[in-house]
Image 1: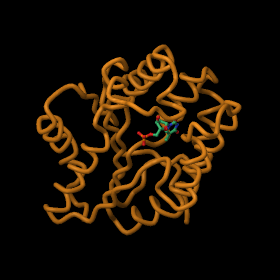
Image 2: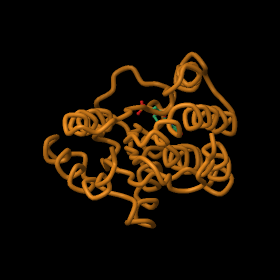
Image 3: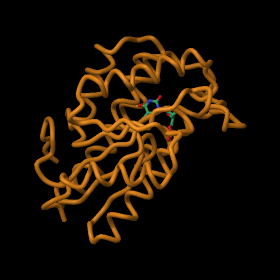
Image 4: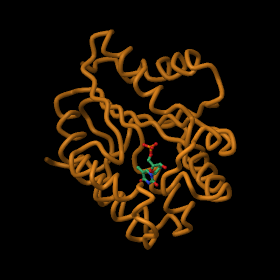
Length: 214
Ligand code: TMP
């Protein structure tokens, strides 16, 4: 599969990003259902875990049983998940002209590993862009939430959720900085809003991008 090296010229690529407990998965599903009902062909997927090998990588990288990992190992595991996901799932669906909705993508690596783990963005971004052939989302929806609100919802915490509040504060700031630097490709919403209102705002922002899409 050929990489477009920026924005795909067929299909529409939408990402949901944000910290823990912000309702990304719910909003991604609601959007997929709404677009399908309107006759679009939609692929709803996620990172990590959008492929079979990705599911295994997800287990390794999130399971508390894994214990400590070198930060760079963590980057490479997430990057491997992305490489497999983009080449075998995302790009083929875009080439078929579909709307691809992914729950997390490259920004999560920049925010969690770059800012959260403190590796900085430069090297982490090179790895993540290389893994994804620099495929960029047409729109990233950032569901923004103070970490204390989102983390409160979790009982059994995985390797990432179990990081301290300061880690998650750095993650949040990083997401917000990424969005602020490229407003044409981001929609930032307060995740504490009503589910239906958030869903409507996402749909409204996406509508112009869907004109002409299948
Ligand atoms: P999820 O449970 O929202 O699907 O996300 C899985 C966890 O993995 C979440 O805590 C964020 C984290 N993550 C990273 O640290 N780096 C990444 O590149 C991705 C995609 C997720």
